[in-house]
Image (cartoon, rainbow, N blue to C red; front, side, top):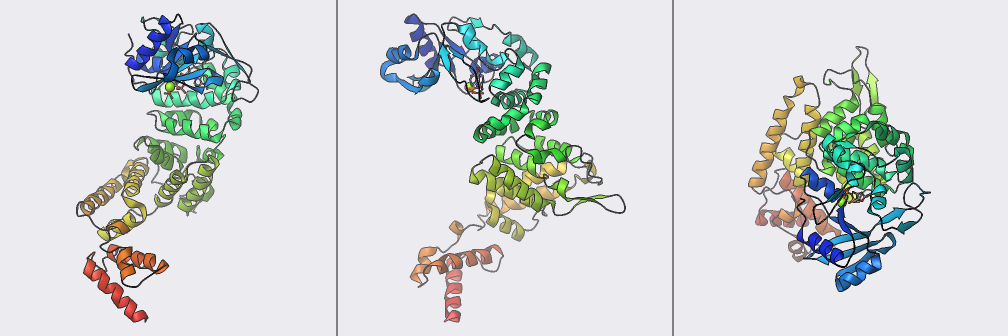
Length: 443
Ligand code: ATP
Ligand code: MG
């Protein structure tokens, strides 16, 4: 028996007592059978959308009636209730041209992407599994419902959904499904980049992200061709025991599953292939690859229309990953001033992962990172000043002293720089005196 939330039970009960069929379906059944907590519970029913609307009255909202979906409020949460549906032909590799409703649960299950996503579970504890999803769950396998070429051809987002489920659930991809998704990868060009992005971040945060990237680089190369020259690029350098791509994948596995971090690590060396030279001793060098990687990262994230904040953070981590780690209180305060606490912590994580993915003989670098982290903790515990809001004077103080316009911001910046660089203490009187002195000298 699945552990259905009360809201879902209420909805199923009400639909059934009105004479309709109603089942939990898709990802929630898959996750519940795996013992994972489902993100959301979807209900599929023989009731037509207008019947569901009438049954739940003011608790029902027509959120996607063109696809047969009504959102029902029950027990203070929302449940999506969708009418058994058949998808018509697909001409754009994205969405069905038409849909139609059906009275057959089996037909509704047949339109779903993978066997493990095509199971339905009822209030009475009955499992409907016409495509043997449970067997694939047991095997840990992703397999298309029906002919993979046709299914990926209908909706190319399924290619990335498949790899995302593989990365997140740790499932393998059934052989015909895997070959087909590779063959059909070019169709991803038809998919809105926002949808690609959403799948990609989930994929990157999966426990098996590196494994999936390793197995299917050419799929990711459809929207990020910059990744492909990294594959197999021998670094010819004693620091490294892997080629650039393998090094990257080891580093990806070594950071926390946060999209920003994983993305920064995936792209941290993307500029290496275009900076590669071999000296007369046969040793490989990558001159200036930090800046090249940064610029490529920026372009790649713009292409996927990432949010400005996401793009800027990732780009900065890529840019900084190749610089020396700050080791003194002063340099860590300076780094904090520019990056802030969160991103400095991320930078340390990126550098840790980068180093751990190098030859073990160089892992003593971890100690430098430990030291940087210790200093960071100490500075934070002391409430060291590294941002304008921590400065002992503010814009109002300067206004009262007769400063105005851009001079206020410039002065605050100058004072903060001086505090961060240990030239002034963050004490109100001392800072005000400094401003007074500077103003007098300017007059
Ligand atoms: P999660 O919610 O963890 O992302 P999910 O499998 O529940 O995974 P949803 O996007 O919530 O994914 O979709 C719910 C169900 O709808 C899926 O399990 C699947 O049965 C079906 N589905 C979703 N997207 C597609 C698609 N592109 N093609 C075919 N079926 C799909
Ligand atoms: Mg879901």
